[in-house]
Length: 419
Image 1 (cartoon, helix red, strand yellow):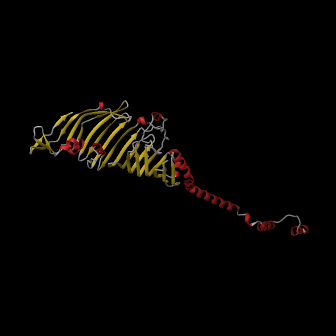
Image 2 (cartoon, one colour; image 1 turned 60 degrees about the vertical axis):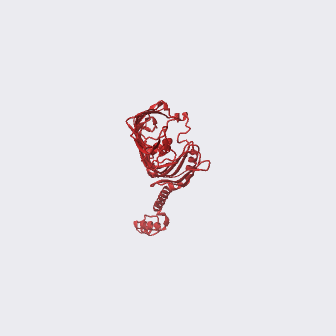
C-alpha cells in the first residue's frame, strides 16, 4: 500500500488518475497558440471575399470590354468599309441595353458619310441564352449613299456586273429574328449623275424572321429638287429566306402599299418645269412576285387625277405591263396648257382667221380620258422603253370651248375622240 501511494503522489511512472488526465488536458489547451483554433472561420471569410471580387469583376466586365473592345470594332468596321470608322462610346450591359454612340464613317475625301447611334434593346444575358434573338435594334442619325464614290457607293446597283449576280448564295443563321426600328433616321442618296434624293425623319420598323416574313412599316419625308412629300410604306414579304436561312429572292412574294401626300408632287416636274399642281394624295397598292403581279395606282390633285389598275409579267429582258380594268385620267386646262404651250399662248389673244374674222379662245380646255387598253414592255437593263411595244385604246373628251368671233360669244360643245 505504501509503495503504491507514493507512486501515485510522487513522480513515478505508475498509473495516472482520471482527475490528473483532465488537469493535463486543461494545461495543454492553455499553452496551445491562440491563432490555431479559428482556421476554419478564416477560410470561410477568404472564400466570401473571393466570391465578392468575382461578382464585381463579372459585373464590370461589360464596361471593361466596352472600353477596351471599341478599338477592335473600329478596326474591323474600317477594314470592311474601306474607310475611317470611329465610335465615341461603346456601352455593354449584362441586364440593360447595348449602345453604340456616334458611330462615324469618314471616306477618303474626309467627308462624313454616316453618323449614327445604335441601341440594341437586349441584354448580354439574354443574348447569351439565345443569340439568334437580337431583339429590337434602334438606329438614329444620318447616312449618305453616293453611287459615284464613298464606302456606301454601289448599294443602289449602279455598275453591277453580270458576274456579281452569280455570286455565292447568301445564308443567314437559321432561327435568326430581329426588329430594326428607325428613330428619326436620315438617308441621302446620290445617283451616278449626281441627282440627290433625301429621306428625312424616317420612323417605323422592319421585322425580320429567318424562314418567316419580312414586315415593313415606315414613314418619312422624301424630297428632291422641286418637291417634298410625306411617304408611308407598308409591306409584307414572304419567301425571302427558307427554313435553313438560305436567301431565296426568286421565291419572294410581297403585298403592301405606298402612300404619298404633299403640296408638290413628283409628277409636276414631268409636266413642266416649275409647274405646281397643288396639294395631292397618291396611293399604290400591290401584290407581286418576281415573275408577275398586279397593282392599283390612284393620284388626285386639283389639276390632275388618275386611276390605273395594272398587271405585269416577266417578258424576256423586261416586264410587260397591261391594264387589268378601265383606267381614268383627268387633266385641267392648266395642265393641258403646260403640256401644249402653243395652245396656251393663244388663249385670250385675238387671232385673225384667213376669212378676215377675228377669233379669241377664252381659255385652254381640260381633257379627260378613259382607257380600255394600255400595254407597254419596260426593260430591266436600264435602257429606254421600246415605244413600238406601246398599245393604247380609249376615248378622250375635251371640255367645252368658249370664246368670241368678231366680238360675239361662241361655244363649242365637249368633243370626244376615240384613240
